[in-house]
Length: 231
Ligand code: SAH
Image (cartoon, rainbow, N blue to C red; front, side, top):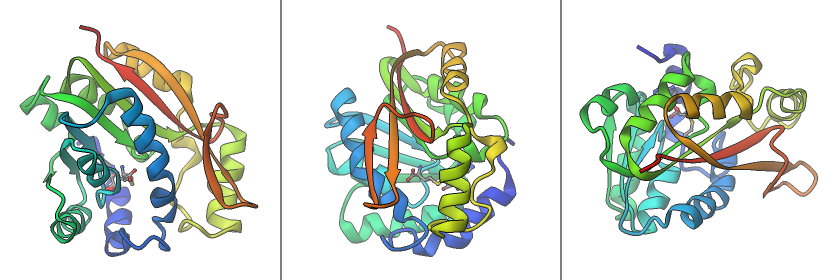
């Protein structure tokens, strides 16, 4: 299976704090409005069938459902999915969550989704190219696929590992492994190999002084890629 059990365990152990906006998941809460609007501007989520791969506690999944999407979230952490499910019950937002690997979902529901998202997950997976391929299989011709990850760039080592884990202690030590970061060129190559067209690239930066995230053209640390499946 294309999953690292230690990675899944790491997320499972923290899962009960997923929706606490001051917890280890604070960065995901803070970037969520930015990525949600970027995705929505490109893919007009209302009424669309969406699948969120590696959804965790469902921060993005639930927010896409709030925009009117028919949203499904999949992950391999049972704990994270339980938290996601409970949260959606509490907030009254209709979302379907399932414990299933992206590749298995792709075999079962190929070409059934208007939009596929896979955020902040590829850098935790042994074979990220296979996840990109599964995403490309899940999307309908003409549909959109969005990825986000961390660039294997010295500035990412400084910000995402040393800064976030050691200096600012925003994330637990060992959250990220620099060697598993992926450059935008590599991600674009995975996408093209999977038959996707790369439509756009967006950087996401954190200013440690103002503690504010913003979208811009600096892709040296966190970035997102928008792709589509040709008709
Ligand atoms: N996408 C969510 C959560 C990111 S945290 C968000 O951006 O808000 C990374 C998530 O990826 C965790 O929930 C973890 O359990 C999941 N994950 C890691 N490896 C995975 C794999 N191989 N298959 C599915 N999910 C995986």
